[in-house]
Image 1 (spheres, rainbow, N blue to C red):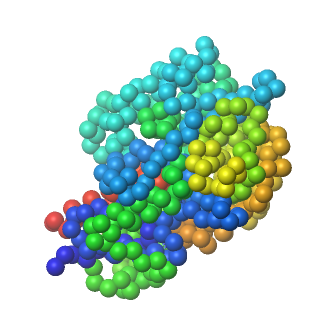
Image 2: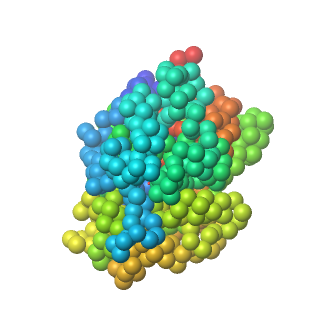
Image 3: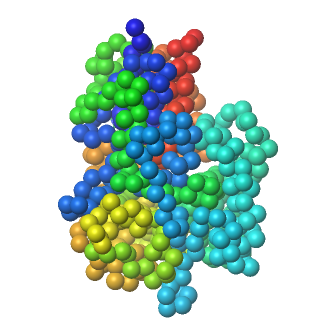
Length: 476
Ligand SMILES: Cc1cc2nc3c(=O)[nH]c(=O)nc-3n(C[C@H](O)[C@H](O)[C@H](O)COP(=O)(O)OP(=O)(O)OC[C@H]3O[C@@H](n4cnc5c(N)ncnc54)[C@H](O)[C@@H]3O)c2cc1C
């Protein structure tokens, strides 16, 4: 008889853990609270019929780079990455009448050329080596931060820049506003104040991934990633049941292994009685980070960006200069939202026509807000887009706003609207959610959500490493 494993939650990490366990010969069952699988990798007609919106994630540098996804061969199960004309555009005020944008193109060389004499060489020097050694570095960067490195020199070189606050690194390395703004936009994905140590790490990884594997979208939407993982799981004999909210471990029946795609709060809710008091206390002490406020739009046409580069980019960082972005990312920790918040925008239909009826488009954008914030940032987000795309508002056919409470209602892992599974601090990046990482105080019970290393993003690597830990435990 195969050993039975249960996975609670069908986000990309839960499904990846399930696939790895099933591939190793376990009989795997996944239980998902919502009616649709995927967690942060779902797609739905949120506004109008025929407009397919990514409920959560939409751009996948880490998905395309993921050793876990590659090892599962998700393309065989229908996943197709679609690359936009450019990974990323970052519009800035001023310039010619056409507007101006700094572009992160697929190649380091083209990006450096765009930064000109001022910062082209510095960009090449900072990002070039990362891209050159991407294949060796990616598995190191997508694992637990504390480990015995296979490429210590490469990792040490990366670490020299990565440990720095993004503001310090950007201002030391780059002379001009354009390169600094590009770097700051990438660093803002860390959901840390850009003055925090290690906030540069995320900027470096995203820039490197952008050149090495691109920032693709998934054809048809993020749901295609979850569907491919579920099909992969079924190919190994595993099953997924939706509409089952697990409320206690006892409901799951006997299982050698239980892997939870839950945040510490979710784990405490179903398993506290079975955890040691000291481990439960550590989980209770775990901190959640800023929330987000998101707007999805059904659009009558492409976004009328003033700068032509923005029209071909999949992702657009709407936030102006480094100083503006830094102020915006500081605000949630101070309990506020800037009047002009840094806004992350993805427009998947520029390269994936399946998202909307012919000639129409979809896009989403979000900004960071205080955890649990009850306000409405729709107007601020739309004003930011309008700032660089005059006439944008006239293109809107329908919109749907999602605040922090709605995020959590649609996915219990999004505590207070935190999309990263927990606050990004140096300690919580390294020892997420406790020094036990994937293991808990109860034998056979594991955590695999983005509250474990390497943290947020659709890459499945938390699930991959949790499954490895579970398989290792079964051997001993
Ligand atoms: C708006 C938004 C935009 C994002 N943009 C990007 C992006 O562009 N690129 C990127 O890489 N990442 C992005 N992310 C982050 C990414 O989606 C997450 O980091 C990722 O989905 C985390 O995966 P996970 O498996 O850990 O958890 P989740 O995807 O959150 O899945 C957890 C699952 O567990 C289920 N669950 C919870 N409690 C229970 C229970 N008691 N019983 C049963 N099931 C339960 C939930 O319903 C959910 O389906 C975004 C997230 C959001 C919300």
